[in-house]
Length: 367
Image (tube, rainbow, N blue to C red; front, side, top):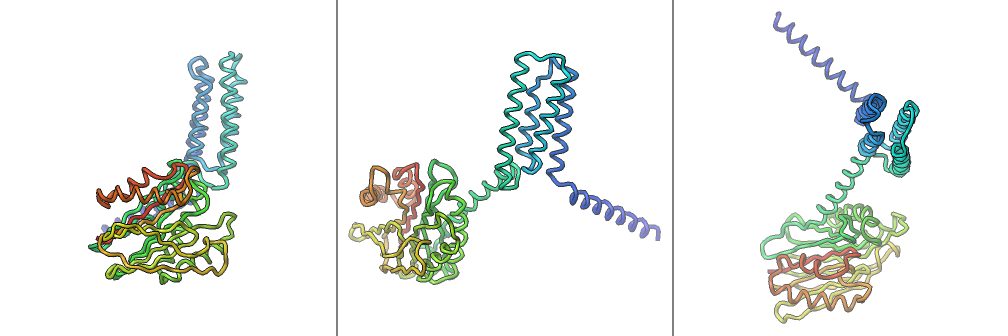
């Protein structure tokens, strides 16, 4: 009986502690904790400035503002900056006199506070603190990278893809989506070039890559580009267009269908003859024409054949038009593929195109 009463009392205390903790988390969020900590830090620094004016520099009050840009949300950051500047003004008023050096330090702090205020007003559009905003960008980058990975193919097939963004940033307007059906009988690949480049096109590329990836796995090959076009038409973006090339390969037979939407053609290396062929079809850019229709081109990949799918950033530059760029890609690929198809995509993207434009390349080989 006594043991049961003891257990009940312990459980009751545990429930009370859990409930109190839940209520605390409900009313006091992470921003409140960081804000309170920084307020205490500001007051401690102010006390040090008043108590030890010769040892503690006035510029030390920059520290809580710098931490605030990382840890405090944009809705509270302006008030915290005003609080720090008010504390600084009080510390200056208490001191009997200021040297020229100290006066310049105070000016620097006020200018820095103004910069923080301006940045917080811009960040308020996102509604998160600096660290959270950076983590969201990292997650954005990782999702684009993950969605561009090609599935493991059955024996007898090889595929590789490489993406490079303008200026070397991790966000690009070019992306790849792929789908291998459940029975591993058909591989669908789509290379997309969103209008714009680098960070400006990265958010739209993320939205499109997720949406087009879902469409690719749910629709027959002939219905994919019309559905993608309808999706872009509904977005109403100012720069809401994209080019795309779609390759569907039946892995058992090697038969394929190719469709393009305002995109550069594919290159096909015939292993038997050693000759290259250019494959392109009629089709408008995605997102510009309602009820667009896209033609297809069919063929068969024989053993040893290689297909290259790429964006215009890989072949077109200010000094070189698209036709010349494709010829250059063909010549460079012919030399590199003699060394083996593994790693060829990486080497081609590193050697060709402009670093000021997004570049994407997919290499497919039937072994």
